[in-house]
Image 1 (cartoon, rainbow, N blue to C red):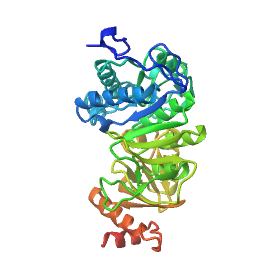
Image 2: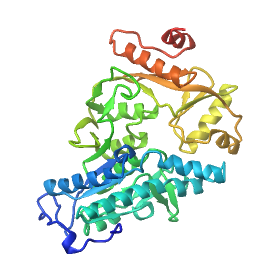
Image 3: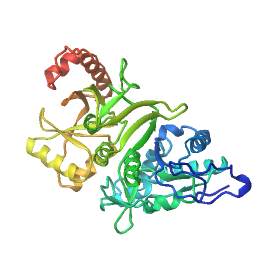
Image 4: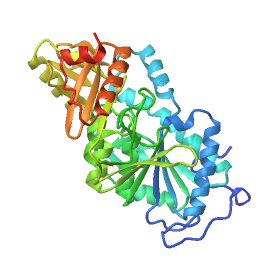
Amino acid sequence: MALAGRRQPPHRRRPQRRADRRGAGGTGHVVTVPSVLKFGGSSFRTLAAYGTLAEALGRRVDEDGRKLVVVVSGQPGETEQFRDRLSRVNPHPEDETVAGLLTLADTVGAQLLATALHRAGRSATVLAGHQLGLVTDSAFMWARLEHSDPEPIRTALREHDVVVVPGGQAADAQGRPTWLGKNSSDLSAVALAAALGAPQCEIHSDVDGIYSTDPHLVSGTRLLKEVSYDIAAMMSLYGAKVLHRRSVRLAQKSKVEIVCRLNRAPFRVGSVIGRRGASAAAVVLNQRSTALRYASDQDADRAYAAFHSANIDTVRLTTGPLVAVIGGFVDLDEFQRRKGLTPGAVAGVPVTALRGSKAATHVAAGEDEALHLAQRLHDVLQDADAEFPEASPESERQLLGV
């Protein structure tokens, strides 16, 4: 079995295209600007998917004449399996331990894709977080990027057609592994595209773009073909799973266009995120998000400040002493205990209606109610003449028909 980072013997390699004006070429050529692609965990539902993708990536190198940086996530459920095993040993582990273990799912995925590329006759290597040149603060979980050095990637591309990167991984200034947070492979990809000077970053997932709401949960959704950075960031802030919020803001700052594509052939383009985009009406439901109700506005403000300072995505709701913790993957009880907070009670699942720059977050009691509420809100928003559904207990009762 070929190991990641090892060049294949001559009899295993396919003939390489000569370099063209775009700067790509065979092994040993200097590459100016590679293409940067990200494939989420849903791309790898079976082990056979690694070989299928490896063949497609090889064809792309041949057809485009451009080398590739490919950011990957672990297979579906693998991160959760590591988390479950960790919690059985220690229900409340330290952040450094969590960051060191959970990122292994993405490392496994990167090595599997690399070996599939080797089998397909391609030269490929894996660069893990401490090798990438992505430097963060020392918050081991939900770390913040501080600067990026493109040289490690450029050096690897001089010897290989494809550099595979496990998503979400980085290191602090002392070289200690850090984690950019749950679903942060998007952020890794955009950060590398920005550092390398790539004009675009391609995000491949099981949904070909940004829809007016999650098409897996709600019927009658519409594809949003052009979305502005601001609208995409707002949707991500409230929990839309297509893109990581900080990846959108970094793309905006770095002038990197985000191209959302399907993760299987023909890899069609669905949405493009950039400077321009039509005003959109959308509903955001992330079933992992939780709304916490505190005893007072002061307690809610303190909790929001604590979550925010720890780089955890939260929204301070205006309809009461409520804080929405977005996307889950946080031990809420332990976090509040460590921070000396008066614990908030679980109020339900936040569901947010968006129209232009307006946002209203409703709170449903449970998952079934959240699905029903999301469908009703989406139906209302698709009527351009309908009044915007502001959040209040009365409006939620009306929408739910109770």
